[in-house]
Structures are given as structure tokens and as C-alpha cells.
Amino acid sequence: MSDSAEFLRKIPSIDQLLKDANFDRLSEQYSRPLVVQELRAVLAGLRKEISCNSRGLDFLKQQMDCLLDTVELQLGKRLQPSLVQVINATGVLLHTNIGRAPVSCEMGNQGIEVSSSYTNLEYDLTRGERGYRDQHIEPRLKRMLGCEASLVCNNNAAAIHLILNTFARDRTVLVSRGELVEIGGSFRIPNIMEASGSLLKEVGTTNKTRISDFESNIDDQTGLILSVHPSNYRITGFTEAPSLSQLSLLAQKHGIPLLHDLGSGLLFPSSHPALLQEPSVEESLRAGVDLVCFSGDKLLGGPQAGIVVGREELVVQLRRNPIMRAVRVDKTTYSLLDSTFLEFESERARQSVPIQKMLYATKQEIEERALSICERLTLESLSTVLIDGYSLVGGGAAPEQGIPSCLIALESSSQSANQLEVNLRGSNPSVLTRIENGRVLIDLRTVLPEQEDSLSKALNALA
Ligand SMILES: *Cc1c(COP(=O)(O)O)cnc(C)c1O
Image 1: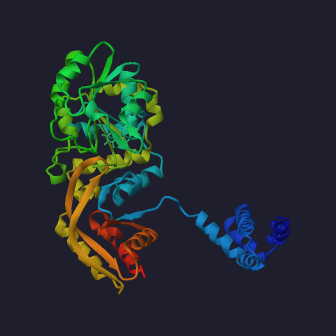
Image 2: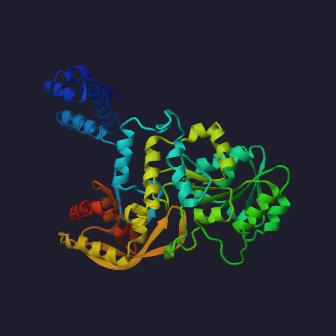
């Protein structure tokens, strides 16, 4: 012990070290306090390594020789942005861990332009007086969906929380037992209900719920009827659930609002084979649902947001709830949402919203892109073959529906599939892939066209 303490004293003090002119150069580049802080951290690491692993004089000398480089390297790393682009070659279109839907560069640029200036966020430029944030999306949504009103908040979970708290605090909410879902990432309907101060009243059974089950549970304590789209699973077989129209009639008869948590944010019914079972906002409204809420960053292809559409009288009450102030979104989000809805209104979304483009890309288009990537590969040790496979929508939409795709299967003569996966993940930008049957698979459906060069480079660097 005392040996080690003695030995550690051989490490010069910070003050001594800082006399080295090279540290002045670093200080000019990074500021003196940062250099001192990093130097302290590096030396602390060194002391720990020496005392824990009984390192000798050689080790200490070697570390002191490259001390400046180590500090510079650490400072460089520390001053990199943390949130960066990755290349999603997994073929899963929507995944929460990688930020769900990417927005297009055009949408992003508009968002940056708006947020790097003052804006008319909450200001009515014609009248010269205070406006309201939702003025930037409400008129468009009214025109497109025929809804009376709309509201934006931080995400769909916040929208549900706000709605429950507004209409069912200290009251009961009727939900079918088959719809008490967990969406992932700690979003569970029963928990969110508890947090909003409302009481869950489960209705029917897991596989069968009838309209009479709802009706017999309505009393003067009922605040809301909630229908949740079972977005990430299917109950099949001996099943029954009342339609939204039936629920709407019942809700109307008793003067109770009906909320449909639709999750995925498909605006209109889609003819896409993977989305035939997916409910749409328009259909919900047509069925007479009072409020529909959905995410902005799932099938809609916009930024993280929770969007509520429905009856004006109810939306007005939501806006008045003090919680609204805590879950409102900023100008960048409004701009990105506005741009996204604009693409839908102008019927260009399939060509311009990245998630929509990915959904509708044909297998042949993906095969052509895959071939062009393979042609650019130069590594002897890497072999590629194109195989048939499936992309997945993910993000709680179309849980079982794969979209036929053309995949590049990679094999290396020098690296295992796991090593390839790790090395691709470690490249800059990081490339995320999946492994199936011992092979690394690359699905170009989810790779943005502008990332293809980086992908080829990452593959060619797999030496
Ligand atoms: C995704 C999802 C949510 C949660 O939405 P966030 O925007 O992530 O808060 C809630 N309900 C359903 C049905 C969903 O699919």
C-alpha cells in the first residue's frame, strides 16, 4: 500500500504539468479550465489504473509521454455532438430507439429557418394581437379531415394524459379488457390512467367485449369511454369487439365523450397491403368518435408530437387545462408538423415524406439500389448476395405485416456475422443492421438515398 502511495507521488502536479508550453497551445484551442479539468480526469484515471492493477514505472513513463495527446483526444471526443445521424439498414421503418420517423431535408430546413428567427408562433400578424399555436395546423386539418378542431402536444402519451385528466379526473374510464395495452417504453394504459387521476373500469373479457358490456357499466361516475388501437399485437380467433360507430352512439346517448387512441397516425385509409388492417383518423371521425389522438412521428412521418382532432367544444376544454401548458410543443415542432401536413394536403406525401416513400418503395426499386451498392464494393473478403425478405413497419403499426423487400446478405471470410454487425455499428455514421440465419442483412428500404455513399464507404472499410 505505502509502496503504491510512494510510487503515485512520482506523478507531477497539475501546476507543474501546465508549465509545459504545449498545454498553453491546447488552452488556446479549448480554454484553460477545460484543459485543467480534462488533465485532472486523465491523471485520476492513471492513478486508479496504477493502484488497482499494480502498474510499474514503465507504464507510468509511457503514459506521461503521451499525456498531452491523451488529453487532446479526450477533449476532442468530449466536444463532439452527442446526438448524431445513424444509417438504419434494419428494414424496420419505425423504431423508438432510433428516433422513429426521419423528416425530409426540406422539412428540416424549413424547421431550422423558422426556429433560427422570431416567428408568428403565437401571434396573429393580420390583427396584430395574440394568436394561438394551433393556428398553424388547425385550418389544414379541418380542410383535410373535416374535423371541428385540433390540438398539438408533446406526444401521444401526453395527449392521452391531458384528455383523461380533463374529462375523467376522479371519474371512471371504460376500456375493453382486450385493449389494456402496453406500447413499450413504459407506456401502459392502466398506469397513464392512474397518473391522470382517473379510475379504470375494465369492460368485457380479453377476447370478447360487447356493446352491452359498455352500456351496463355506465353510471353517473363515468367520465370517458376509451378505445385503444391494439397497435402492436393482434387478438385473433374467438373474438368480438363493438365497432366505433356503436360506441359512438352509446357515448352520445349518455353524453359521455368517446376517445380513440389510434397510435400510428394513418390519416386516411390506405390501400398499402401492410396497412389494410390499420385504422385511420378519417374513419374514426366518420364513425362519430369525439376525440382521436395519434403520434406525429409514426406513420404520419413527422416530428415527435401528439395530435388531437375532434369536437371543438372538447378541444377548447383541453386547451384550458393547465397541463396543456406543460405539454405544449415549440416552434420547430409546429413547423415540422405544418410541413408534413402540407405534403399530405398537396397529395405529394408519397413522394416527399421519408416514411411514406419507404412504405411505398417497390421491391424492384430496392433491388436496383441494392445492386448499385453491391457494384460499389471493393473488398475481397466480403461477399454479397441479394435475397428475398421483409421490411417491418414497427412502431406499433401493422404488427404482423411484413413488406416484401430485397435484402443484401453479407458474408465475410475474415469476420463473423456478429463482428460485422459490431463493426458496422461502430462506423461513422453508424450503420445498424440485423442478423438472420448467421448472416448480416441490409435492407435499403430504410436507408435514406443520401446515405448510400456513406453506407458503401462503411462496407468498404470493413477490412
Ligand atoms: C405509440 C402509441 C402510443 C404512444 O405514443 P407516443 O407518441 O410515443 O407518446 C400510445 N398509444 C398507441 C396505441 C400507440 O401506438
